[in-house]
Length: 110
Image 1 (cartoon, helix red, strand yellow):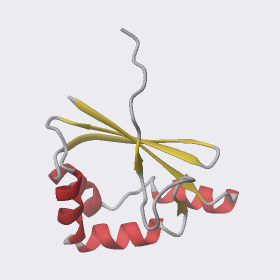
Image 2 (cartoon, helix red, strand yellow):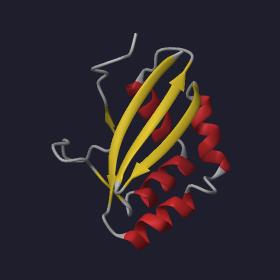
Image 3 (cartoon, helix red, strand yellow):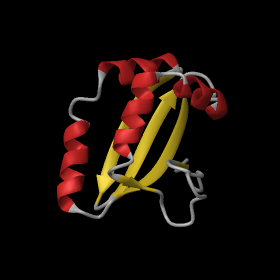
Image 4 (cartoon, one colour):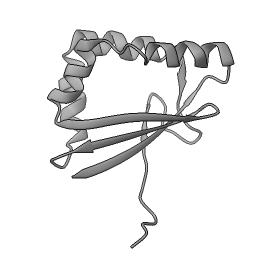
């Protein structure tokens, strides 16, 4: 099982954060189906203040460029991502236009 951890910030506004969480109580079924069709077996988002952590599990090693191409041809995923950008902000130091930033594992208890 491969694990990937990503980081992203939300707009630091409690009303917008509440709206963002509300959207995630009913993620569109087409978007969830698209996630699964990319080989992802588990996907969780945690929040601390306005910082998000996304944890993804996949049976196979993920090809993120291929996933991006696949998603770019899926209308409901495009609509969802455009909607979510109303609430999200890249973490400091991110490249312009980038979104979720892949974390680097620096410690693991043995």
